[in-house]
Length: 302
Image (cartoon, rainbow, N blue to C red):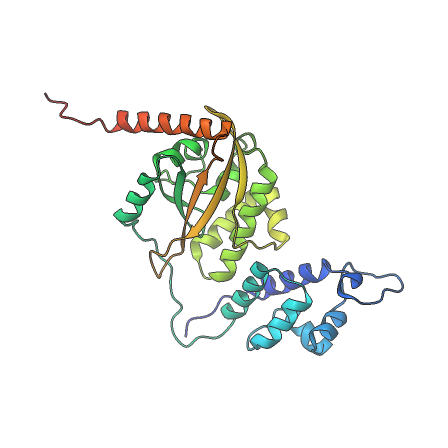
């Protein structure tokens, strides 16, 4: 039997941080006297969830194996977890279960030609495919131009493949490129936290988190918060070196390509009729020109 990852520390810290964020007033409990710790006490969570204090204390110490879904649901409701946080808690519980069969291993997959064709067809949207570790594994020309500082960064791997987390936390220039670096960094860490809950045995992910934790104080601080993000999308602003300040909407979509690796397709667009759309069209024209120069048509021998 394959040894399961020990995620008791993640379970303990996640539940403790969520408990610390709640107040008695928020859950309808009376308040009296001075409280030694922020948030709810363990015995208060236990009463609200309908379990014994001893049982909840054991759970918060990371002993989650064998806990029923009904009990996890009760704890999630008591701690007022978001849908993403609830999913993360259940992922932690699933990872803690003993398994008789070998754990499914993750491995890199080649991007099918049809996916690249899809990306290339989006000439007025910046589109790319990323894996769960936030590596960009495929892109169209406009996304390559939009994220030129990321692709040109010294944080890319030996194949020139960029990673959002490594760029944000290991390249100081990312603070100039992102209009809201703090917000982007927080989302990035929360996405990695959720991914670690789904795939605790992912060696490449553990190495990435270890590297960033060792080098970056900002990453260590955000990682310790145990914030989780799975479903995301919204608006981001960039200080592009060629096009200037651009505010774009983005939406990630699940892209099922393999049973061995999770991918998402992310699309950046501009609101029609705005200066941001004009700037994006300028980048699209620039990207098309660069692509034509790199791959000229016709027979050059004539």
